[in-house]
Length: 245
Image (cartoon, rainbow, N blue to C red; front, top):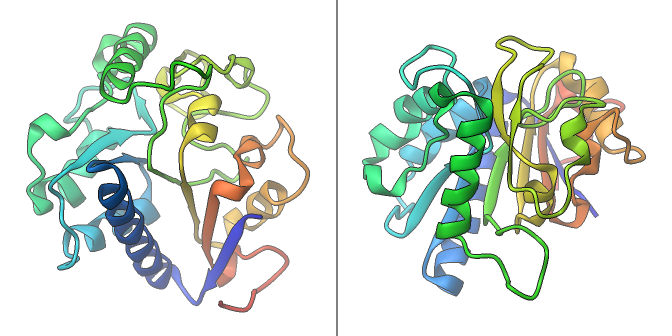
Protein backbone atom coordinates (compact mmCIF):
# COMPACT_ATOMS: atom_id res chain seq x y z
CA UNK A 1 0.00 0.00 0.00
CA UNK A 2 1.11 3.54 -0.75
CA UNK A 3 1.85 5.58 2.38
CA UNK A 4 0.02 8.90 2.11
CA UNK A 5 0.56 11.85 4.45
CA UNK A 6 -1.41 15.08 4.16
CA UNK A 7 0.04 18.27 5.66
CA UNK A 8 -1.36 21.73 6.30
CA UNK A 9 0.88 23.57 3.84
CA UNK A 10 3.89 23.32 1.52
CA UNK A 11 6.40 24.16 4.25
CA UNK A 12 5.17 21.25 6.38
CA UNK A 13 5.36 18.96 3.35
CA UNK A 14 9.01 19.91 2.87
CA UNK A 15 9.79 19.37 6.57
CA UNK A 16 8.11 15.95 6.59
CA UNK A 17 9.92 15.02 3.40
CA UNK A 18 13.32 16.07 4.77
CA UNK A 19 12.74 13.99 7.91
CA UNK A 20 11.74 10.99 5.79
CA UNK A 21 14.83 11.22 3.59
CA UNK A 22 17.07 11.60 6.67
CA UNK A 23 15.63 8.41 8.20
CA UNK A 24 15.86 6.38 5.01
CA UNK A 25 19.44 7.40 4.24
CA UNK A 26 20.50 6.57 7.79
CA UNK A 27 18.86 3.16 7.45
CA UNK A 28 20.60 2.48 4.14
CA UNK A 29 24.00 3.47 5.53
CA UNK A 30 23.49 1.25 8.57
CA UNK A 31 22.55 -1.73 6.40
CA UNK A 32 24.95 -1.37 3.47
CA UNK A 33 27.53 1.25 4.45
CA UNK A 34 26.43 3.58 1.64
CA UNK A 35 23.22 5.34 0.64
CA UNK A 36 22.16 6.38 -2.86
CA UNK A 37 19.81 9.37 -3.15
CA UNK A 38 18.31 10.61 -6.44
CA UNK A 39 17.04 14.19 -6.70
CA UNK A 40 14.46 15.95 -8.88
CA UNK A 41 13.79 19.56 -9.76
CA UNK A 42 10.89 21.74 -8.69
CA UNK A 43 9.89 24.15 -5.94
CA UNK A 44 8.77 21.60 -3.34
CA UNK A 45 11.78 19.30 -3.74
CA UNK A 46 14.02 22.38 -3.69
CA UNK A 47 12.68 23.47 -0.29
CA UNK A 48 13.07 19.90 0.95
CA UNK A 49 16.72 19.98 -0.10
CA UNK A 50 17.27 23.25 1.78
CA UNK A 51 15.89 21.69 4.96
CA UNK A 52 17.97 18.55 4.42
CA UNK A 53 21.14 20.63 4.12
CA UNK A 54 20.31 22.31 7.42
CA UNK A 55 19.36 19.11 9.24
CA UNK A 56 21.86 18.73 12.12
CA UNK A 57 21.34 14.97 12.47
CA UNK A 58 22.03 14.25 8.81
CA UNK A 59 25.45 12.73 8.12
CA UNK A 60 26.47 13.01 4.48
CA UNK A 61 29.51 10.73 4.65
CA UNK A 62 28.71 7.68 2.57
CA UNK A 63 25.81 9.30 0.69
CA UNK A 64 25.97 9.30 -3.12
CA UNK A 65 23.89 11.87 -5.00
CA UNK A 66 22.16 11.00 -8.28
CA UNK A 67 19.40 12.59 -10.38
CA UNK A 68 16.00 11.34 -11.50
CA UNK A 69 16.04 13.47 -14.65
CA UNK A 70 17.68 16.47 -16.26
CA UNK A 71 17.01 18.94 -19.02
CA UNK A 72 19.52 18.99 -21.87
CA UNK A 73 21.05 22.28 -20.83
CA UNK A 74 24.40 23.35 -19.39
CA UNK A 75 24.89 22.61 -15.67
CA UNK A 76 24.81 26.31 -14.81
CA UNK A 77 21.61 26.98 -16.77
CA UNK A 78 18.65 28.30 -14.76
CA UNK A 79 16.60 25.26 -15.85
CA UNK A 80 19.19 22.71 -14.73
CA UNK A 81 18.12 20.35 -11.95
CA UNK A 82 21.79 20.00 -11.08
CA UNK A 83 22.10 23.74 -10.54
CA UNK A 84 19.06 23.68 -8.21
CA UNK A 85 20.62 20.83 -6.23
CA UNK A 86 23.95 22.64 -5.95
CA UNK A 87 22.29 25.80 -4.68
CA UNK A 88 19.93 24.14 -2.22
CA UNK A 89 21.72 20.99 -1.00
CA UNK A 90 25.09 20.02 -2.44
CA UNK A 91 26.79 23.35 -1.75
CA UNK A 92 25.24 24.11 1.65
CA UNK A 93 25.79 20.55 2.90
CA UNK A 94 29.36 20.43 1.60
CA UNK A 95 28.91 17.18 -0.32
CA UNK A 96 32.18 16.56 -2.22
CA UNK A 97 32.06 16.47 -6.04
CA UNK A 98 33.24 12.87 -6.24
CA UNK A 99 30.00 11.75 -4.59
CA UNK A 100 27.75 13.80 -6.87
CA UNK A 101 26.80 12.17 -10.17
CA UNK A 102 25.13 14.63 -12.49
CA UNK A 103 23.40 13.88 -15.75
CA UNK A 104 25.40 15.54 -18.53
CA UNK A 105 22.54 17.23 -20.29
CA UNK A 106 24.88 19.25 -22.48
CA UNK A 107 25.86 16.00 -24.26
CA UNK A 108 22.35 15.58 -25.62
CA UNK A 109 19.65 13.12 -24.60
CA UNK A 110 21.01 9.86 -25.93
CA UNK A 111 24.74 10.19 -25.26
CA UNK A 112 23.94 11.69 -21.87
CA UNK A 113 21.57 8.84 -21.04
CA UNK A 114 24.07 6.20 -22.18
CA UNK A 115 26.84 7.66 -20.04
CA UNK A 116 24.56 7.95 -17.01
CA UNK A 117 23.36 4.38 -17.35
CA UNK A 118 26.99 3.28 -17.46
CA UNK A 119 27.82 5.29 -14.33
CA UNK A 120 24.87 3.82 -12.42
CA UNK A 121 25.73 0.28 -13.51
CA UNK A 122 29.34 0.74 -12.39
CA UNK A 123 28.55 2.40 -9.06
CA UNK A 124 25.44 0.38 -8.19
CA UNK A 125 26.01 -3.12 -9.52
CA UNK A 126 22.75 -4.92 -10.17
CA UNK A 127 22.00 -8.40 -8.89
CA UNK A 128 23.51 -10.68 -11.58
CA UNK A 129 20.71 -13.19 -10.97
CA UNK A 130 18.05 -10.60 -11.81
CA UNK A 131 17.13 -8.62 -14.91
CA UNK A 132 16.15 -5.65 -12.74
CA UNK A 133 18.28 -2.49 -12.88
CA UNK A 134 20.40 -1.22 -9.96
CA UNK A 135 18.51 -0.14 -6.84
CA UNK A 136 18.69 3.42 -5.53
CA UNK A 137 17.76 3.84 -1.87
CA UNK A 138 15.59 6.97 -2.13
CA UNK A 139 14.28 8.78 -5.20
CA UNK A 140 12.67 12.18 -4.54
CA UNK A 141 10.00 12.95 -7.15
CA UNK A 142 7.55 15.69 -7.96
CA UNK A 143 4.44 15.14 -10.04
CA UNK A 144 3.18 17.20 -12.94
CA UNK A 145 -0.47 18.20 -13.37
CA UNK A 146 -0.56 15.59 -16.15
CA UNK A 147 0.71 12.86 -13.80
CA UNK A 148 4.26 12.70 -15.17
CA UNK A 149 7.22 11.88 -12.94
CA UNK A 150 10.89 12.52 -13.71
CA UNK A 151 10.72 13.04 -17.50
CA UNK A 152 8.36 10.14 -18.11
CA UNK A 153 5.30 11.68 -19.76
CA UNK A 154 1.80 10.29 -20.41
CA UNK A 155 1.70 7.78 -23.24
CA UNK A 156 5.38 8.25 -24.10
CA UNK A 157 7.38 5.45 -25.72
CA UNK A 158 9.86 5.64 -22.86
CA UNK A 159 7.24 3.94 -20.68
CA UNK A 160 7.64 0.81 -22.82
CA UNK A 161 11.37 0.40 -22.25
CA UNK A 162 12.17 -3.03 -20.84
CA UNK A 163 13.20 -4.03 -17.33
CA UNK A 164 16.85 -3.81 -18.33
CA UNK A 165 16.56 -0.09 -19.15
CA UNK A 166 18.33 2.23 -16.71
CA UNK A 167 18.38 5.69 -18.27
CA UNK A 168 16.66 7.06 -21.36
CA UNK A 169 16.95 9.99 -23.72
CA UNK A 170 13.85 12.09 -24.40
CA UNK A 171 13.55 14.15 -27.61
CA UNK A 172 9.91 15.21 -27.53
CA UNK A 173 9.02 16.35 -24.02
CA UNK A 174 5.65 18.15 -24.03
CA UNK A 175 7.21 20.62 -21.61
CA UNK A 176 10.15 22.74 -22.77
CA UNK A 177 12.92 22.07 -23.30
CA UNK A 178 12.01 19.06 -25.47
CA UNK A 179 15.31 17.21 -24.98
CA UNK A 180 15.88 15.56 -21.59
CA UNK A 181 17.47 12.63 -19.81
CA UNK A 182 15.44 10.51 -17.40
CA UNK A 183 15.70 7.43 -15.26
CA UNK A 184 13.57 4.66 -16.72
CA UNK A 185 10.32 3.46 -15.19
CA UNK A 186 12.08 0.18 -14.40
CA UNK A 187 14.74 2.11 -12.49
CA UNK A 188 12.12 3.98 -10.46
CA UNK A 189 10.27 0.75 -9.73
CA UNK A 190 13.50 -0.95 -8.66
CA UNK A 191 14.30 1.76 -6.09
CA UNK A 192 14.01 0.72 -2.46
CA UNK A 193 11.84 3.77 -1.92
CA UNK A 194 10.28 6.61 -3.92
CA UNK A 195 9.14 9.77 -2.18
CA UNK A 196 6.60 11.78 -4.17
CA UNK A 197 5.79 15.36 -3.17
CA UNK A 198 2.85 17.48 -4.33
CA UNK A 199 1.63 20.90 -3.25
CA UNK A 200 -1.05 23.21 -4.57
CA UNK A 201 -4.54 22.73 -6.00
CA UNK A 202 -3.13 22.29 -9.53
CA UNK A 203 -1.75 18.89 -8.46
CA UNK A 204 -4.91 17.51 -6.82
CA UNK A 205 -6.27 15.81 -9.96
CA UNK A 206 -2.87 14.27 -10.68
CA UNK A 207 -2.60 12.89 -7.14
CA UNK A 208 -6.10 11.44 -7.42
CA UNK A 209 -5.24 9.81 -10.73
CA UNK A 210 -1.92 8.49 -9.41
CA UNK A 211 -3.71 6.67 -6.60
CA UNK A 212 -6.25 5.16 -9.00
CA UNK A 213 -5.81 2.30 -11.44
CA UNK A 214 -2.33 2.06 -13.00
CA UNK A 215 -2.31 3.50 -16.51
CA UNK A 216 0.21 4.73 -19.07
CA UNK A 217 -1.81 7.94 -19.20
CA UNK A 218 -0.64 8.71 -15.64
CA UNK A 219 3.00 7.60 -15.35
CA UNK A 220 3.06 8.21 -11.58
CA UNK A 221 0.41 5.50 -11.18
CA UNK A 222 2.94 2.96 -12.50
CA UNK A 223 5.35 3.37 -9.57
CA UNK A 224 5.67 0.39 -7.26
CA UNK A 225 3.12 1.26 -4.59
CA UNK A 226 4.44 -0.74 -1.63
CA UNK A 227 7.68 1.26 -2.04
CA UNK A 228 5.99 4.62 -2.55
CA UNK A 229 5.56 7.37 0.06
CA UNK A 230 3.40 10.35 -0.91
CA UNK A 231 3.41 13.62 1.03
CA UNK A 232 0.98 16.35 -0.05
CA UNK A 233 -0.51 19.53 1.34
CA UNK A 234 -4.24 20.02 1.90
CA UNK A 235 -4.67 21.73 -1.45
CA UNK A 236 -3.23 18.76 -3.37
CA UNK A 237 -4.83 16.08 -1.22
CA UNK A 238 -6.94 13.48 -3.05
CA UNK A 239 -10.65 14.19 -2.75
CA UNK A 240 -10.06 16.90 -0.15
CA UNK A 241 -8.01 17.02 3.06
CA UNK A 242 -6.94 13.69 4.57
CA UNK A 243 -6.24 13.02 8.26
CA UNK A 244 -2.59 13.17 9.25
CA UNK A 245 -1.05 9.97 10.65
